[in-house]
Length: 282
View 1 (cartoon, one colour):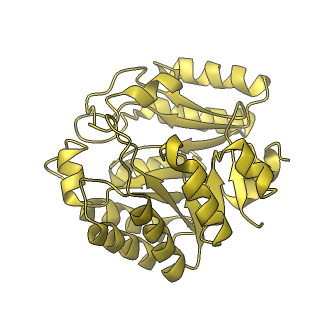
View 2 (view 1 turned 120 degrees about the vertical axis):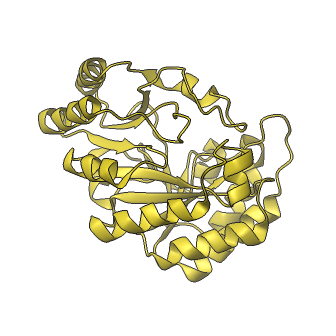
């Protein structure tokens, strides 16, 4: 199998610049994902925490956290300065999950030597309004920012993540978003499957159809990302691997890795090809 499994493990860690705080409190999360991140509540704390992690063998970090009511990570100039210093002093791989930020912040992330941006794109306007609590926004705003970034900088700099199989969007809507993103020709697209907060109901067939559609129209790498319900992994992972629908898969089950003899890279699944050798593999 040519599919590569990506497992961040202890070598690629997520940090929250807001700790457990989030102003947005999307209905699919309610801040629960922040509990798995290392809190760094000031630029100084970010710098020295990452220096410590680097000294212990960490090779990559995701700078994330809770979003503001405007749907973005509160990245101040001081945080960007700390990131630039970390890049200069350690060479650690840095990714950022900024949300719908401004073009100016995109420019600052590039000049701070951030390696790549994980950029989530909603599958519909209703998803934004009902799940993300962003009633003043629309999907088109995310696609416009993606287009600006791809046109302005390296095509490895921004990696679109598209959420599929959400009850707050239709299958037709998510396929249309996938089509629009594919037309912009990023190097890879990460597909995420919404994890219900209060049930185990997931339309697996719909998710697989979205992945098939992406593979059929997209010439870059197709990635099945880490956001997907654990209880569907044994079914969906096997299907997309054996049908050659993906190039990368995040945190598959151990038995899947062994059954298909997958190469494993202990890093984030969005990472540019040029950095793979930095991380442990098996």
